[in-house]
Length: 269
Ligand SMILES: C[S@@+](CC[C@H](N)C(=O)[O-])C[C@H]1O[C@@H](n2cnc3c(N)ncnc32)[C@H](O)[C@@H]1O
Image (cartoon, rainbow, N blue to C red; front, side, top):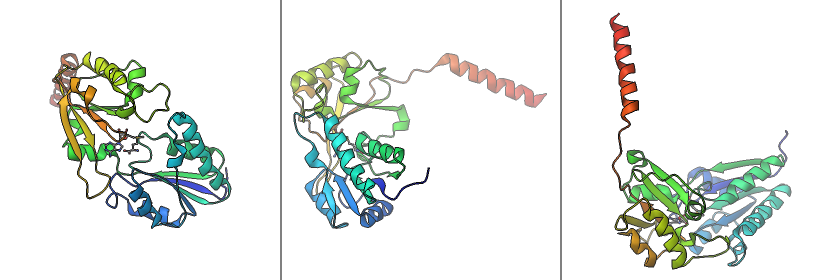
């Protein structure tokens, strides 16, 4: 299919103002006809405003009491309208535009389906900051990530010998998809699910990456049961370190050992 004039590129501006934006993403922002932004802080929005004269915030599309799905569709529609008008459109999203963020994926998919150019440029996500600030290597024990509500709504396989990271824990359990935060009764349900796999006194971590360079991160360790009354914001991520040691899979290790021995014998023959 021939691509039509008009394009959408979604870039990530990273978590911390001024320090995480890649040169390529910056140049997309600077050269765009119009930039739609969804960022963590008014100052970040102003910073992007210095790179392009036409920056439009997507924040007003969120309304407490309105399903986020409605807001997401409206954001996508606003961007697609400009793409159809033949403009070079950029969506500038905080963190990585493709990590726990559906609007950038949706708008690129729709633009491509209509025959327009669509691309995503990575950014530094909350997860990247978390790995640095908490000195976690996800490869050490393995690591699974879930959106907290989805984790509650579905039966998932939990591996307590790996890290478990729950995103959007501030709105955990929100069936309406329209709340800006959920309260203690919702959180108690999450604690009860986690308590099936982790001791109640297991130390979990509330993590917040700094959005401004003058801020520092928040790393608060607390027992699982204390999550109930903890201060949790829309920008808090819950990190649950492993509570069990890795268990060797003796059957697989023996099979692999036998293969090694076979190979040695072949060499000797
Ligand atoms: C809709 S997701 C967006 C994630 C973003 N795309 C990224 O790459 O990090 C929102 C969730 O990201 C996490 N998050 C956002 N800002 C954060 C911050 N400053 N520190 C830690 N986690 C954050 C929280 O779990 C929050 O509920």
